[in-house]
Length: 314
Image: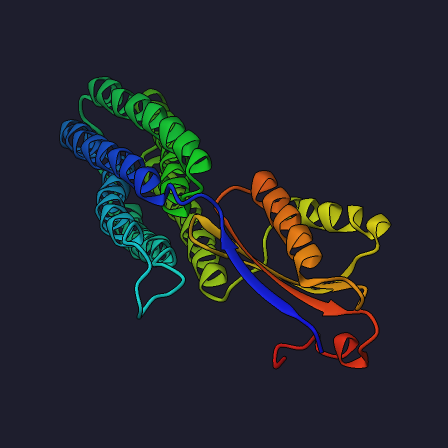
């Protein structure tokens, strides 16, 4: 059976990409330090368990940001003999680690809230504490939007996870600020721990979402439907030129995509002609989806074996 198997990666600018991503990881670490100090000050001023829970979540942000920096540094290492497909999956460990930290923080917050429900205490200097907490929230929002943009630009799950965690932190802080303000106005002391419990529930949801995404990445989840559709459209366009395809498989590894496909061509074609089509198909896929490694396997229509080799053991 005449066949050609080709592997081609898109232009490798991963070193520059990860270097830039590391700058944003350092930004996240710096913002986390400042936010922790501000929220701890707000808690010290008011004695609010809600603000304490907010400060604890920011501590988790710091741990996650430091893990993100470590994993991005690992992911930027070039492919080697032991890791022929690169080190991109290291980013999933960061997302999973942060998810577990978030879940642990949620438990700590819930326990503290239950204790405060049993022993309610009045809040002190509420409005001053709220002002400090609001400043921290503004800093978190600015950092989160910056990280989210960078995560999408560099296809970094680590930066995107950090950004979404910070956005959750912003909404959590807004709820806590509202609760502390309501307590200071109504003197309903039970509002503070109840809001803390709601914060814990929200943190659990975020932690589980991040952990699930990390697990999916480690299990070689296929590309998103929109990206998969782009590949299908490109391959379908070559049917009018006498080609067909099957055994299309895709996966993600951190910022890099991997695509493999069998291309069916007339057996009378020369290797040179098939090679030219391979170059065109691979180039179009890489143009549509940068940072993609494409593997094409050419087979003749006329060979029956070409139509039964679509399983993984092929």
